[in-house]
Image 1 (cartoon, rainbow, N blue to C red):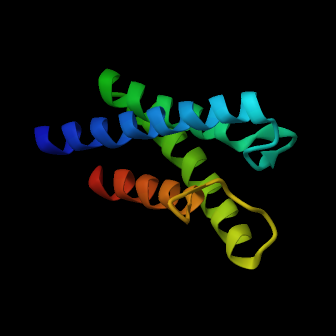
Image 2 (cartoon, one colour):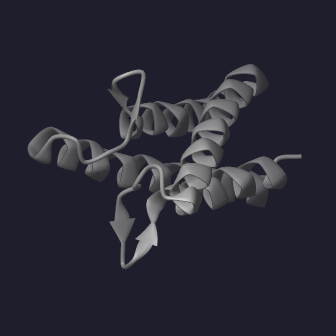
Length: 113
């Protein structure tokens, strides 16, 4: 059980760090991240990872559910749009980060079943 918690903390922490980098790029470059209701998606993804991180620290399943649901829905939506060429997600080493986010949220959810 402790290993699951530590791995979840690690994934959520890495997600927070990566999201902060994207938020910084969004602020400095403008229109770097795709938008949801005119809000850069990287802000919402950062919030999702922060909710997951906080929920693990506080041992709160409700906050965990909100954070993972929000993050997973966004990741699925933007991954789908990336696949059909409708939206362009930020990339790192030629890998769209919406795919990385999707895999990360899926791993966090599966790990905590």
